[in-house]
Structure formats: structure tokens, C-alpha cells
Image (tube, rainbow, N blue to C red; front, side, top):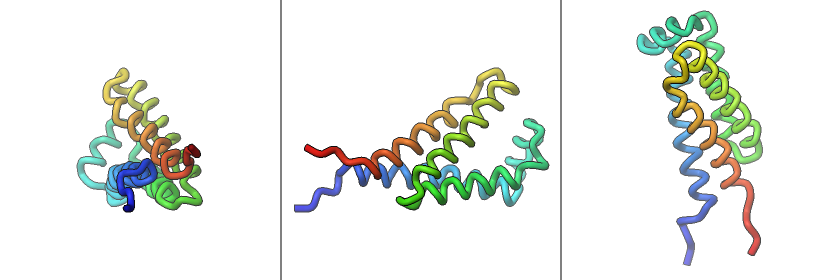
Length: 119
């Protein structure tokens, strides 16, 4: 009987969640949606918005492929560390939970998919 509830499959579910959330954020930065323009105007990052979105999409693309998932997790956590620092400097630390969670989930997904425990 095949087991479907494995740690590796949990890693793939977490990967799908991170890819969906950050992929949508990156896509909205590239297409410059109205809500993202308001956010980036507040943070004074409108000229860099396209590059930030492209880097987010590259990072989640690297995370999705097993051979490059370590580089993707590193890219996602680096992007989220930048988001945390922006939230501390502009908002006084408000709203840092989600970027920290996404960075931790990216590394968790990589580790669950990559490393196996030998009994």
C-alpha cells in the first residue's frame, strides 16, 4: 500500500503554497497593480518594483525545481529579510509575521523535500 501522507509530500504542499503566494506577489509587482503601486509608493520603491517582482518570480521558480531548491529557498529568505527590514524601518515592526513565515516555509519545504531520515 502506497503512503501519501509523507514528509516529502508535505514539503511539496508547502512549496506549492509558497510558490502561489510569492508568485502572485511578484506578478502583481511586474504588472503594477493599483494596490501594489500604493504599497510601493509608501515604501518609496516604485522605480525598483519591476526588479523586485522579477526576482521574486525567479526565486520561487528555483524553489519549485528539486535540483535548485536550495538556491530558491535562499532567494526567498533573502527577499523576505528585505521585507522585514522595510517593515521595521517604515512601519515600526508591524506586519513582519508573514515575511518571516514565508522565509521559514521556504526552507522547511526545501528540507522536507530533500533530506530523508534513515531508520
